[in-house]
Amino acid sequence: MCGGILLHFVIGTMYNWGNIITYVTSYLRAYDPSISYKDTVKIYPVALAVHGVTLLFSGWVSKRVGYRNCCFLGSFIFVSATYLASVSTTFSELMLTQGIMFGLGMGLTYTVPISSGVQLLPQHQGVVSGLVVAGFGCGPFIFGALSSRFANPSNDHVDQDGQFASYYPPNSEVVANVPNMYRNLALIYTVVMFVGSMMVSEPDVNISRTTTSEKSNISTSGSRQYNPINAGLGVEADADVEESIEDVSSTTKTSTSIHNVNPLQMILLPLSWHMALCLALTGVGGLYLAVSSKVFAQHYFESDSFLTTVASTAALFNALGRIVWGVISDRYGPLATLTGMSVFFSFIIWYYPYTMTSEAFFAVWTFLVFFCEGSNFVLYIPLCIDCFGKDNATSNYAVLFLVVPIFNLVNIFLLADLEVDFVTTTTVLSAITFAGFVCLVSLSLHIRHSRNKSTA
Image (cartoon, rainbow, N blue to C red; front, side, top):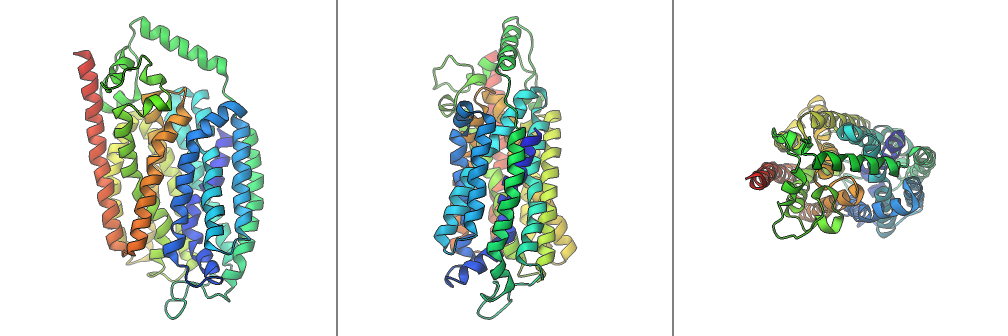
């Protein structure tokens, strides 16, 4: 688990793009003045999309080369992407390194250590998932501050008007420091990811088989089983809960229990599509704000040091949120926790633009945004495992997660091209998140109905 935390500590610098986007965009404009935030903001969703696609085969890779070797491979690609960004001078080159290669390395090292952890500690899925991905949130706290220290040690701010309004001038110290920033980060990433990969544990296959056998014996003896999904709904699961949930799909004819399905079987189940829609709707708002909030906020606050401090500290709240939501999930179930979180998050997003009246108000609200945002990537992991089992947990979650980058890609491209203001952006994102709340309520009814139908 410690190895997973270190790996997520580095790959969590995906969120750092929202901090360095002002530096990197200004750097690219020194070579091509036509480049704007409208272009560079798209690098982030592309990285996320590649990350989602890579998750589809990361489980396959880990099973064939080993969990640890899979993490080494992902680490090598990730570090290479960071170093090559230091010599990238065009938008297409940066898209290749910080978009495609970054997402590939992140995808190979994301769910593998989580899968290892939940297999070794099956009774604490929420806490394990929360602790590991907490590293994903903590990373930007350190690397965000380091990035700004490397690129903007003098705390220069972007021009507020004139030819270079909202950007740093081509002859500025910030623009000159961007290549060095990437090289320094690549060196640090190399050390942290090597140590993290070495610490990733290979799950004991014999233990997993024994656990599966014991569960099978319990089921056939007629004993009652605990199911975290139903616990989240406030109901108790029967011994035949696997068959009852499997009956959700009346169109699929498979003898395999839903608790042991593979990705191909999972996508045939209406339950998986319903869950994927929930994830798409509740996850997009936070991801968009993570990359764009500084671009909007720099029109209200001039100090780059202040904005960097807020973004870096917000990463800690992102990490804290992942742990807190994981603990709540273990107590009340992932589905109930997600439902409550989503309606609260919808309000937080909607009110965000109205916090620009003071630095303190803006900082606190940004912390709340990040606190809620990280919950999606903790709570859907145990929810997916509860529904579809641990045997193919990495690949199954990858299939489920794929809807997020696809939806986020469309969302960011659309909002960027329309060049909408902050109020319009947050209104749209709030409405999407609230739709996710409605979808989660219907998901709980979906599961209740399938259970009642099977026991009738």
